[in-house]
Image (cartoon, rainbow, N blue to C red; front, side):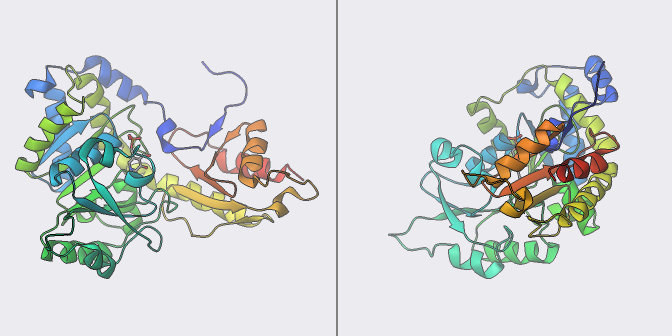
Length: 354
Ligand SMILES: Cc1ncc(COP(=O)(O)O)c(C=O)c1O
């Protein structure tokens, strides 16, 4: 099927192609109309996801962004505030959906690594005064994408949950990569999910499914979420064909994520040896963010100062894809769909600029 040297695509864990088992499961999936909750494969996936995370119910949604936005809409009313950190996915990469779709205002916290303290959250919650907007929701992210895959400690989560709940404010988790967080923390995924009023996680990232995320919560919350999913245009019909690879993802793919964490550690160790490259935060999961400075280019002068762009272009010429986040930062993400010699070839390509 493929010829020549295989491209190594480290831009994201969303680039994975479904496994053969997933493709077979898609072909054989039993289906029904999911808007009537009559798709047996979707129902099975929702039950399994809720069970694994320790919730009463779950809802299959096409994307992680929709899962987050449905959660935000369920928990809040227009004109309320959502407390989130300055680097969160819901703030950066969801097209201002909280404002556009739900009339919400982000109250942004500057945090260490993406994780607010209980004190910060408590202070950000508006007092119940007639001339202040209400705080509708606290949203956390674990593991943290722009934080370089960093993991929030369970204790830190608990403290934030308590601080919010004491003031009657619910807490949502953007757990797009919650299984990676669980492995890094050495706990069952249900422990990472515990104490939240809702959790969204993705099947289409490190777990390798072609599409889909789940929003987990109480029976009442998910009943309302189902209505809002339809309002947002996410009511799907014979979608068992897409839930089937999700079942394979939950059954077969969660157990191997530690391999991706190891790949990232090895990449980080090699990159740290290069002059001009710095790794600000030790990687904990499958995401690595590092900075590239002028020293990496040696004698070469980059007029535009776009060191990350120049680095990424050099790698691309050598068959390696990485993502420039800005003029200095580069992101690499490990996943199951990489060749075995990924670390060696990537480090050799980085060194070949000399
Ligand atoms: C932390 C986080 N949350 C949510 C999402 C959204 O997922 P999707 O791309 O399926 O909308 C992503 C996607 O990269 C993510 O990294």
